[in-house]
Length: 330
Ligand SMILES: Nc1ncnc2c1ncn2[C@@H]1O[C@H](COP(=O)(O)OP(=O)(O)OP(=O)(O)O)[C@@H](O)[C@H]1O
Ligand SMILES: [Mg+2]
Image 1 (cartoon, rainbow, N blue to C red):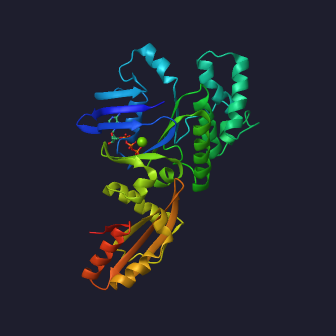
Image 2 (cartoon, rainbow, N blue to C red):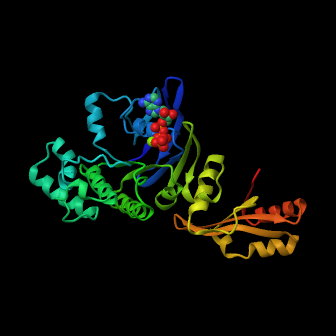
């Protein structure tokens, strides 16, 4: 199912938590929304999932407007939505199986069907045979698997994940993200992934929107955003990724006036040597690496360029002509 947002606004007193957001979230995809704490991500999700009404603007699921529905229509339309959260929100008094059964019980589904569907869902999330496990005995990753199974119980068309992996370690995060991607394909879901981690966007999403102070500051395919980020917020997110990610090696924390971004074929070519030979520029490389984003190889190099500003400018010009995106620190 496709989701369209038109000029959405939500204020809390004088605070514009969501401020004129328009987005097209295609069907059958994993769509990321990234932003700092307080950017308005959760508020936006509450508007899109019809848990809260916008002060202005419209929400469409395919061609149906859903932000102004009556109570009965709302209940009907909400069945199309599954949600998972950072803190899992499971019932600790129920075991895994009974948590998954809960939304089906609410819909008064047949007992035998519930039993069969629960077993199917446990298998889908890799918890076959663990239905009797009390929630307190499960690890964080397993709890999130139960939450995913519960969210999918009544066959939604949209899955919202609000910081679903923020409480998990990196390895478990990767496992849960690949599970979500696999399920997305299997069930043709529209997955909306809310996060403050660029790793999540890189490892799971097809497209991403960057939210800052209630506004969308950038939107596009993930590999485009990684290869040529435009807003300062996006660059900040990417630089925190370069510092922590294992594929980028940093030799020195000093300097690094220029950030070079290489895309596709450019990662295979001796670009630095060529530029150095042609201009006489000297590169003092501070950090570099290649990462795979959505199946595409993207290179990043953080470097100083010498010996003087005019040669550096010439080198930058040549690099840009060769398809390398160059950002210069202030
Ligand atoms: N019910 C509310 N009443 C008043 N202010 C609110 C309410 N909900 C959110 N806000 C404010 O709106 C802004 C956006 O909050 P929101 O929870 O959407 O941010 P977020 O991007 O999800 O942040 P985080 O990453 O910390 O979860 C914040 O300044 C928050 O304090
Ligand atoms: Mg939030």
